Image (cartoon, rainbow, N blue to C red; front, side, top):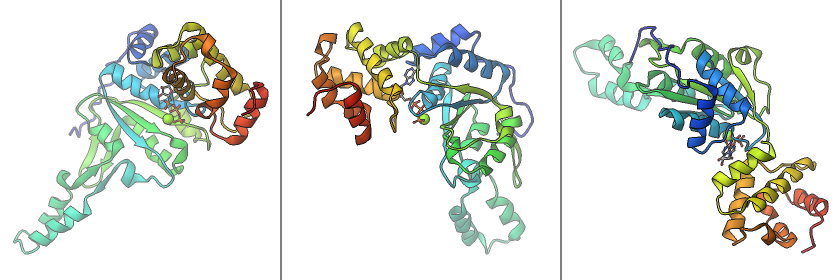
Length: 302
Ligand SMILES: Nc1ncnc2c1ncn2[C@@H]1O[C@H](COP(=O)(O)OP(=O)(O)OP(=O)(O)O)[C@@H](O)[C@H]1O
Ligand SMILES: [Mg+2]
């Protein structure tokens, strides 16, 4: 553990935007120009990357892909309502401390020695933020779905993301050896604070262009011919234009393409209106959305 203030700020992971794109693609993540550019800058400037956008557009996957592409360990803090410092940063192992107290209360050294002993590294339970700071290896820190956490956690993040150090009163100040690549994701169910936004580079990921989505499908669900891949993407993009409760995301496009492969449909000619109708549940997850789509796409009744 490093207690000096010597975070390695110098080393960058990517030499160019093209390199970001290529190395992410090697891991199976196809980045748009905006994604590749912002990822490159976040690394070059040493700033956290705040990624917002609808469900299933590749926010979480981007962090995983950066970790895979750079050979870094992925440490994930999954946020939820009520996540607190003890879950995010560290807590003391009270059960183990009690056992030690019980075992040693008769010892001659007295309470002071015992207290120093039970507030030492051995009794510390590091949670994701502290794990990222203390890691000896390079780390990608993913703070996933930050909008689900209470606003207090942002204060904690501000402190830590500023200089990548944290003070544990009993142990002193712990400083990261390597600057983690930090990705924060949000579905924007609540506004994140201005203070946090200011410290980050902001990336909005929207549904991909048809061209990019076709490449994603080809990569993730091989087995369809180009014409069928194009039809699949066209249909999904058309559904996104309808006013649905839950528009299909990239994840659903990939699932749908895999469904077609599983059903033995690989050529465009195989895509009948009946096949679309019978498998709409892969793309749409609400009955009223399915009904709306059935009308809009003029699909035959069951
Ligand atoms: N650019 C991309 N390249 C390759 N695959 C992608 C890309 N974008 C999305 N995907 C696919 O979509 C899936 C869903 O992505 P991911 O889980 O990252 O979504 P998300 O934006 O984090 O959604 P949520 O807000 O629901 O957490 C991935 O597992 C992957 O298969
Ligand atoms: Mg996600």
